[in-house]
Image (spheres, helix red, strand yellow):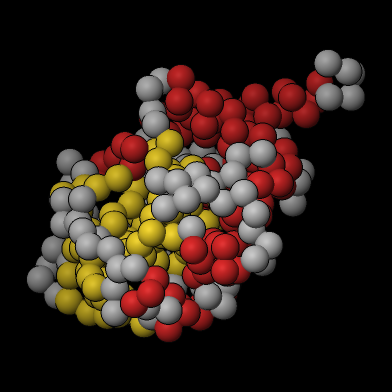
Amino acid sequence: MTAGTEPVDAAIDAAVERLELAAASGIACAPLVDLLVDGDIDTAYQVQRQLTERRIAAGARIVGRKIGLTSAAVQRQIGVDRPDFGVLFDDMSYADGELIPVGRLLQPKAEAEVAFLLASDIDDASDPAVVRAAVALAFPALEIVDSRIADWKIGITDTVADNASSGVFVVGATGTPLAEVEPIDVTMSMRRAGADGGSEVVSTGTGADCLGDPLNALAWLAATLIEVGTPLRAGDLVLSGALGPMVAVAPGDVFEADIAPLGTVTARFSGKD
């Protein structure tokens, strides 16, 4: 280790410890602006990788990746201008309609998106036809994003370090072959039913709202992961990114997303613990 790397390594270690403590304690932490240079994406991904390695060492298993910040609406909500990616672990997955304990989340928000299950590895993302052919099935999905940073006061560096603000996710029970659907053409309507009995549509969008096409998002992720040496593999699940604005989750909420023609998917949350 050179003298020049010592401050960076110390900052990475401090950021890892801060985010881990927030996750373990359930108490959101301060932004990472005092540790990481704003916009230093490479260092932020180093934090994410260390957190990932610790999760794996503790017994978690990677099942895929998520793409974040693909919707212009979500980028405006967060105040960033580029996509990012994070890791999906097995213990983040809930079945369609399964009760999600709200207490495992700090500041959850729901967003609807298209999920892709890969049939083959993607070692070359330069050809859109190759990327498309790698997809086995497309599913309706709900991602419940979360942030360990207090009040969602995040920049791109914070969210990248914090595993792209991942929480949990729900994938619909039935997938659709891409021969039967164009992801760019899907339409999304997400409805929330609250604990008070009310119900309303809270988010809408289309496939074109996800980087112009969810397959564009998949190609971006595939190319990015090839560049960093961890390419997508057969069997990976990819959450391709929000089709519309994310919506805050309250205890007892039920979210149902209709992503036509893929079908519907439901996330149910427990009341207060």
